[in-house]
Length: 247
Image (cartoon, rainbow, N blue to C red; front, side):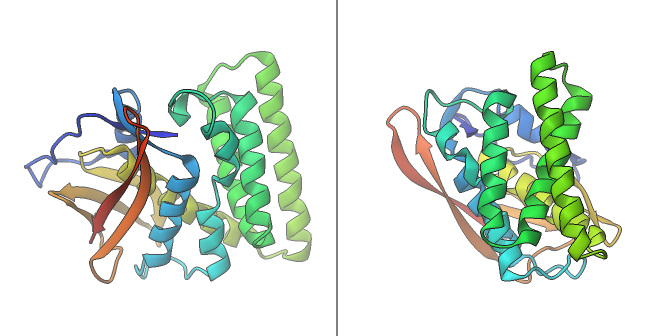
């Protein structure tokens, strides 16, 4: 789940304020008392809506199948998100997130092999980052290593049929990860301006909240875009709709 704090900060008034790394802003929201949660699947659907609307010339053109795979990239989290108290995705261990990752890849595979390779590449990157930054127990470390080996084999098998596809998969994985963190930033309710790590055509993008509007620099969207995501209010278990205005 993505937790959304009870008290959302106002957007900084200083428009010249330096952007912080987007993951710093996302992690900060996940450590505050939550008022709402957004399921992983609903967050992924929002990421797909973002992908469908990006019109920046720096980005590759996305097929409907790839957009759909982005929308499904956390589909395997349904079981994990439906049990127990609200807990942030950053606290979930390998015993839970590895089955969720595999289920998500399988959901994307039903759309296209390329989409599955993109989603797989996303989780392999996350796995490698975790192995570098987290001291897991030996058993958990082996589980993660086995996952990386299996998904690396998936990529090799796909590239036998598409020998020129490696760069395409890497670029599409960048797009997925960009839309993923953009959606996490929106869902978590962070206010500070942020820089997204992925580059497209050598360009990095910043996101800023200006009142109720989120603006990108350089511009991502051809026109003002309204998006929605479902959330659950923790105190009442009531479903609500979050609305975002992007420009």
